[in-house]
Length: 576
Image (tube, rainbow, N blue to C red; front, side):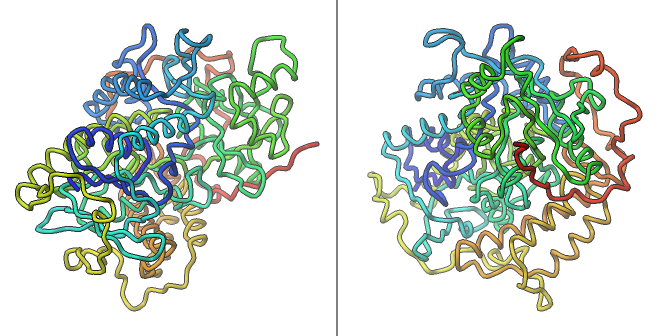
């Protein structure tokens, strides 16, 4: 292979389609081609595509949401190149919603911390599925080779450069793929936490493998907790209720039915995600762990009755509507219990603006990469945009690397595209450089393998969650140090090894940042003095007089140091 792409979400498939135009490409994915987080994305994809909107305005909102740590040049690239990448998605067949049928303008939604409506949706709340379906169809139509059901074990490192990867196939065989360049697009690591909106495959495989190969990781202390996951049923805290619902007018209420966001931030329910999520946690702790309520009964034109509102919600949010009703709630008439849940990693494999990591031959894009566009808190609906923008950029850079590597190592000896069976021939020899496979995992004879993934997830949720203290982080580090990684002989063991590796990295990063900023909130420390960007986001007019002034009586920030760690949400049952 010239370019090996690992992962099949929007970043991976965008990279594969871009590179396939002039090189031999192979896509390898742990599950099925359409699995992963992209297909679950409800909120949409942000872009300056509407009348009066500009990339500069989008960039200003992105920088403001990033709490002073987003990198201006990375944000500029994201926002300026985003509209062209969105146009390419439309050309591939993604049918974004329109205001009044075919030929009418695209319907643009508003989400938290955006200064204007700029969110494109497809199928109401099925944007990710529409994008993933179109990308998969394009990959199939192009005949790009795909290897499904093969999990990344480790990267092949030769003479200090990545030249392929080893995989564990579903049948237990080990496969080795050699390539001139490798693009990691393996997604995030939401499975670190007991409650996450991420799919089961999100175990941080690419980040952990990159670290073992010598690549630098950065900003792992910044895990975004989405404010509103459905807190009902056995899967409480796993089904996302899109921010677009609040963008349409839904309100957040405590167990007494009172709004609380107007007392926290003048943008109320449309404040940045880190602000809203912390506020919800504070309210949950004050009411014994009970979820807060998402009230959608104000959505829609004034004067409509509940039956008409129910039909409106079903049209605008068909996926959410089905899940809420399956849980037994009539959200046209009553509040729905919600809780924060781990959602997105702002940090990851350190890259430049072309996806290059600190190891030659290795590139990364999407959630597994730390490009600098998100800073300490990701702006809503920027993740799909990041995947397509930087997936394409990583592909271009990987192609250049592969051509250079091919001349030196002969990877382009065959003129024709090899058969998939040849490209993924079984190889039981270890091709990792000495010491690489065990990097960051050998904890000595005293470490114990007597731990479970559920224990790790609960530890991370309670000690390294949305609100943290130094003592909690140190205790988590102590416990994690006593656990030994399993030998990666099965998929579950491989994932557990990666989760343990990343859990230690996250805790280490969190301990290294003693102040609070964005999604990293230390209850025992003051806010970090992060620099302010000159491009301040436009101030949104508050929805009501109550939203304009914070209530000094409401507990905020450092006043919460006495509260216990965030409890697991107590699922509510329907009131009927």
